[in-house]
Length: 81
Image 1 (cartoon, helix red, strand yellow):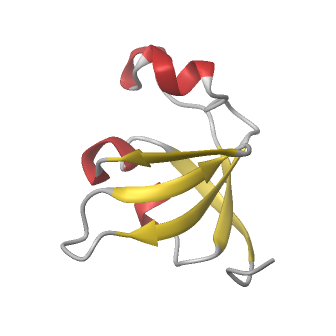
Image 2: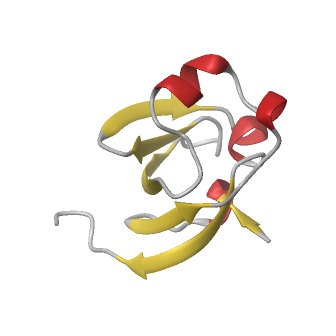
């Protein structure tokens, strides 16, 4: 299964079910729940951290954490949409 780090810039994914203790509470409060969407906004020059749009909240997370968020890629989006 793919994870958030597999997204390309501007691509969106739908979050799948994951272990309850896999993510920090702050991400769960921001809506990182099954059925939510995530979009890759920017990747740092050294590939870590990544900047994502999580259900309308723009956040920066480490690749190691993003790898724990399983997704299915929904559709390609252009960055200025």
